[in-house]
Figure 1 (cartoon, rainbow, N blue to C red):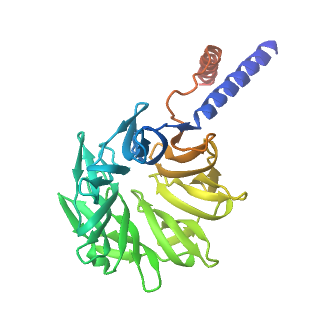
Figure 2 (cartoon, rainbow, N blue to C red):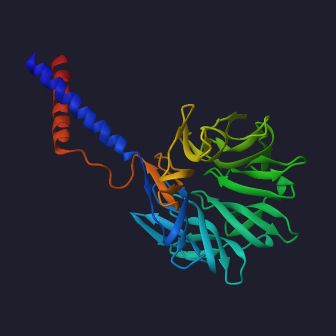
Figure 3 (cartoon, rainbow, N blue to C red):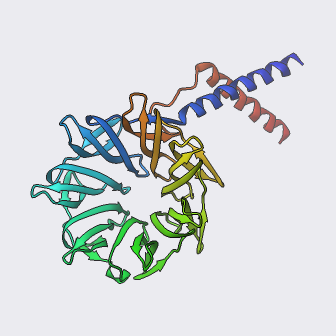
Length: 357
């Protein structure tokens, strides 16, 4: 009986320490800045490389950044003073927008250490929002006739998705199959769309007048936001032809920004106290991810490992880019006693299985 009791104590202690160590790894990590006061993360690839924008030491200057191995790298600009990174693929290619030496805002592709200007559809601005592993890029550009059109950049050419037959459209997300999601104008407002195989589908709404799609995963599941019949903005999941309302964190509105291959969804929602907090939605439950000590946060991207990035207020009132992950850098190590108990537990379990076998 004493041996059994001691064994149970060891098992209980080992499991407790193990669970504490695992839970300690699930935290919101402040990624810092490029020597300025604020930063925001927009996307993360499956290798855990993060991109976004940060203020620099120079006042009123924001630069695109790439965060890797604990360091935030300044990606520079297209000759102007401003840039922001909005998307990254698994090859580490980054897209976003930057001011040029002429003062225009143009979409860029950052690859192999250089920032390439992607040009426009004839107008004076363009913004790239997403890139897939086939190097296809989506975004929005002003056309020569003054409209803003969704574009697909592929093979070195910016293609106007004019088959949308709308005055204004924006493309925000693309999956590896080349399916594009975004928003276009309708007779009554604007609706989320799916562009696939040269055809466009209007995704409708949650009963309200407006909707917008932000991201699409490998399975074709789409997330974004829509007004409902009450006129409130709610995050949605569009799957198998149906738009599902994801609810809120107790407040009046929510927006979904990202979805991974497993169907985990991230975004931002108001809480019952009126604050805006980042959320993770999975298995029908919207989880509040908290903040960096301040009152607000928003999740903007998630990779297939479940690592989440976004922006959150800290105790000093500044907004910083964050990484929320069970795989966060510098995880809490298991104490030596826990390792001994854990190995002992495995040995006991193995011995029991051997005897039973």
